[in-house]
Image (tube, rainbow, N blue to C red):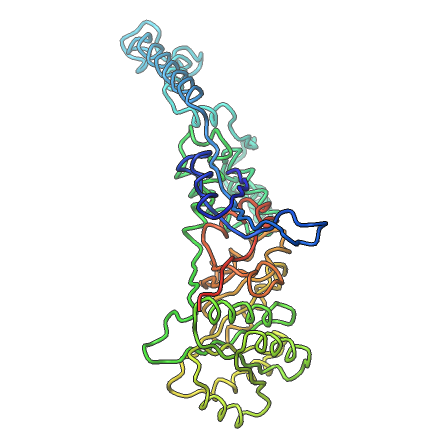
Length: 447
């Protein structure tokens, strides 16, 4: 898959250029508004432009495809001619003066060559380079062993019973080795390798691009997403969402982005709350965003007063920021659950885990397991613009059966956030270079 950028005067112009240049197989992955020109670099009188990221599948031209088909056809004809030129007696070893002799290797070689000629290309290649197995040579000895001899015999034979690593096509192995170095587990990659071998033909395996494209499709099937904050909310209920996660994961900034998205862009009545009474800077930061957007804000220092405020709150969506508790201290998570009791029957509560894509594989797993007690169902993945690889995080969500909700891709509020996308996440795993050019959402105020 190749990625190109196209600029135009508006989005329709960009899409028209994409279809004219690259045809119907091109895909639009991202869009943004940019400015060009301006007087003396000040931006004055700068021209407003649209820019889109386009994915273009690699493909051979028609001449190359025709030549390849002719070559495959000639190969099949040659195989058929070789098969027909050998008498049936040579295949079965009966009714011929040249009988099969294992000791002399007579027609056994002819039969083997004839069978190999009609095998698939991938099978012939595997048989031409068979794995090397160590052979043990046992000397003749009397029947029966002493106890010491039996023990030594078991120790000698045991290593030979180890299973051999299955052979894979070099292109599949190349992808597996790379993803293994980027943090994915061998068990997950083994499942993926088996699926790729089953889905790709011998002809498909000749091009590495076919393997990577099929790997993207495989990951798309395993990734689960849900980017609607009101998802699962019963009719007539108010949605309350607690955002939890370790310190520095990006909770406060992500909440501000979602508040802008749902209030300014979607016209919902949104309120912002915080239970973080430890960091004054965190309270001031969220209050600054709330004031800038004209949204109600409340810092919960007393549970009784917080309950009174919630009863008077007429919002349909309440986003709650929480302190960055250490996932190693269970008492902090128990204290967090006290705030859940403040809300009433008309409220529908959900918890979303905010997880940085830059954390190590082991730390991400420890955080995910620790916050299991608060019952989160979705993950908001942050700092994609700072990540090198996404394989381990995508595998983690698959392992613990959680959905991705949103993707935070920078510090710019409100734009640097995206709805989670199966295709985008899968492509970022297989093509990590795509992480460098990822950009946030572009929208204008609609209400």
